[in-house]
Each structure stands twice: as C-alpha cells, then as structure tokens.
Image (cartoon, rainbow, N blue to C red):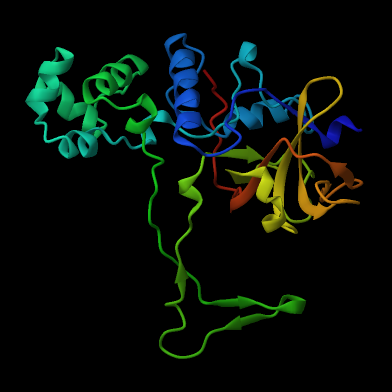
Length: 282
C-alpha cells in the first residue's frame, strides 16, 4: 500500500469510544507531556503543517519530535467540579478544607482560571468521592448554525424564499465526542480541499460504522506488522459484513478493512490567502 495513502497512528493516544474514562486517560497523558515541556500551551494545526513539509501524507504522530495531531487544548475542556460539589451540598470552603487548600483556589479551579492538573483532579475526586473522570466534562456546547438554502444536483443553489429563509438551523453534536483536526497535505483531497485546509474529525463507535457510509472518515486499522494505520476517504461497505472500504479522493480504494477505530469528518475550514500559520511547535 502506497505511503502517500497511509499515515501511522500512535497506539493508545486516543480512546476508541468517547467515554469519560477514556477522556481522563487522554487528559493524564496530555498533562504529563505538558509537564515535560513536550507540548506548547497552544496545540494548533501547525503541527500537521510542519509534518506535511517532510512527507505528503506521512507519519503524523511522533512524540520524540514534539509533534502531535490532536488539535485541542486541555484548558478548553470544561470541568464539573462546581456541579458535583453543589450536588453534595458542599461549600467551596468545605471542599478547600478537605483538600488542604484555600476556597479561592477552588473557585479558580472551577472557573478554569487556574490550570487543573492531574494532581488536582485526583485530590478533588478523592474529596468528592467520585472517579477522576467524573470531574471532566465532555464540553458539550450548543451552537446554532443558520443556512440560507440548499445545494442541489448540478451545483444549483436553491435559496429559501420568504422572510424566514435564513432561520433554518441545526445544532451540531460533535462536541459530545473526542475530536481532533488534520491538515490537508498538497492534493491529498483534491479537488474538494487544497493544501492547508483543516478538517475536524470526531471519534465514534466503530461498531456503528454502517451509520456513516458515504461520509468522509478516517479509518484506523491494525495491520500484520502490529502498527495502526489511518486512511482518510469516503467510507463504503466491503465485500462482506464487517468489512469496509475507504475511497480516498486521490488514489485507489483501500478495500475490505477491519475497523479498529473510526473518526468522522464533522467540520471543514478552508485556508484563506490572508490566513497565517504559526510554524512554531513546542
């Protein structure tokens, strides 16, 4: 299989299903790396851009070279400290006494002003008698997106008529899951995307892959060499039940894959001429 069509995915970096315990394992890994100076304060898609300079669609996760492909920040993740504390009828002062701290510190941790380290999570979880992962919110946000019409066959745009043509909306649910961004390298997704465009993928249960047929996905498989490889393309069924085919925008279909993980594209951001990419990583 051509190197241009595959990218090795580091084992164990992401959970296979979006559970809180899996998120907690990811968080501890993130915090450990941050304490070692491996990850900068802002993890951006520039990490992928830097890697793209070395290979067309090559190895995208290499901790020894300070590269990471999960484009999220731990400080953006909401926590449930206040929610759980109030459910147990504890004041900030009472919780502070339980962990040997000051109530102002508890307030800062709840509001995200102070960084929530793995040590703090363990101490607070013990004081509140909950699991550490219970303190971490999946960060669900409600965002209304309005659209004016529909793109029909042949590329024709059908604008909704009337005063309410721009009122139709939907609420994306992708924030309920673990997600990450990948940057398009050269012509890997031509003609749909160009070099520098970034795509957000959300982690879903691979056992429900049938629900995502014909969608742009990243399929992760474990091959005979023991390594995990990721393929980005449109998901189709395989020759029999339980097998799937990825059809990349460029190149031959990769047929009859047994899915180890599945990530579905949920958002696309095009690189504009005035956009600037920070090439500094770590």
